[in-house]
Image 1 (cartoon, rainbow, N blue to C red):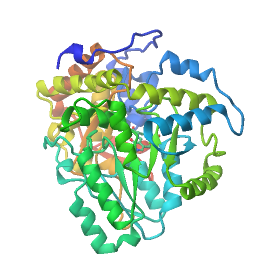
Image 2 (image 1 turned 60 degrees about the vertical axis):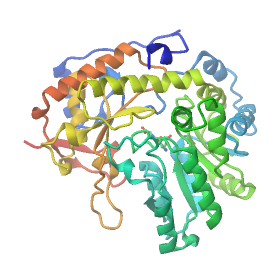
Image 3 (image 1 turned 90 degrees about the horizontal axis):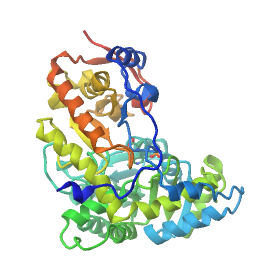
Length: 459
Ligand code: F0G
């Protein structure tokens, strides 16, 4: 790949100044934050790779869309624009706006899951699994084994192992499975795509057992890019058409629009079934707002509708994923252990390999994220045992095979020079890795503990 293959299809009209801090400032800041990068102030961060969620740069067209907000309580023009755009680009007939992805997950889970149900999915996501559990369900991982292996070069690590679905239905019966939840570009696996061939098999399986297929479409455009590049027969199909084809294979979707669709806040639940829509409308008024705005301002719905159209453009997505691939390749070339293949939204450092002297119970990925911040002011996120949390029945820590630090690239925000700085920073931590110490909890929240947990170093 040459730079011409992924050079940005935009130019910069406005900039935001960022500051470089001293090592001493950063040491103080991370101690104050209890070694949790979620608890740092963004002012103390130089390059912020915590997340790609809500951190993208909107286009001038999206900003213009904000000015077209129709802030009526009911029946806003922007809602109808959003609904029509969702149907045109994503195929789903009905749209229920929500304040963000987890708002949609709550309504979906409350509508479809009964106490004692099982929800299979291609790897867990933190908020998704929690809402399934709060509704009385149990998440069952049905992703292929390769997804749990950071070294495997499988091109579609988001694929489902159909034999795991068969085993589940044999064990609990189809009545106990309200839906199968499929994420595109699986976040916790390292931003890994599912193939269309596999998704078609899942569709067939769901039809056979009369089970719904729900799509976590948070990063569907990035997944479509990988299908175009890797799956036979799609080289000449546009990302826009592949996105539509993926969505059309599924019955309903939850969307965190803060990622692919490049808005700072927003999301939706979408579906084709009128009865399900009616049920979701009845709940959205309880948790979010009236069904024609859910959790969103009119102006935000307009910016989202425009963001959707921009997100599926081939040149946009090639530049977006191209930048992530550039960072990953440079890290790999300098001998840093990362998850392969390189993902769509982030590069995942393999903390198990980078810090072999820290056992998993002492949170190597959490310690690595803190060390990277101290070294360079680059903020990243733990995606390992802290994020995985505890089994709600046994109270034991889940022990994921993947103990990772995520360097997540916001869309249209940072430059190639920033990526080069990140490579240098990770190399410096690698050189001084023996100095990095394990951590223990000083405060552990009961749910979604990674957001607010605090730690101290073990000497
Ligand atoms: N599904 C996936 C695959 C996600 O990555 C996220 C959020 C959600 C659902 C929930 O959406 O944040 O809008 O409520 N992921 C962010 C991240 C937080 O940093 O990966 P939300």
